[in-house]
Length: 161
Image (cartoon, one colour):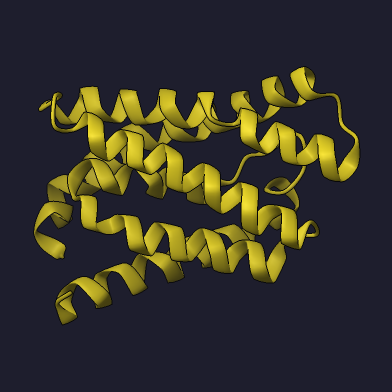
């Protein structure tokens, strides 16, 4: 892995952590609006960003989650699964906008893993929790699409790492 790739991923991991810290009360319950999740769209532009996103999720859950062990397994696992599906789908879908839509839908659907986590850890009802976490994820990812798309026009994420 090149130095450029390591530095780019470290930068986005740090940004993920910083943004998560700002909205900490809204990022770890059955109603989640973790704004930093919009960084998940980075893999649409360059699959190498998976490392920074996963590191950011891991460290955010390590430092801020009240459900530490659960979040390290389920939260990181959900991100890894969803990012991997999005990266795999890029082989077949070339449009950036279409890949962002797929990424949004994949992350929204895989929130069932977070619902399982919250059911196990806090005895929340599974389907209601899946619904509320999925809605929060969908809103953040959907709102993040035009933001990340516009940022890419200026920054060119595909060329950063």
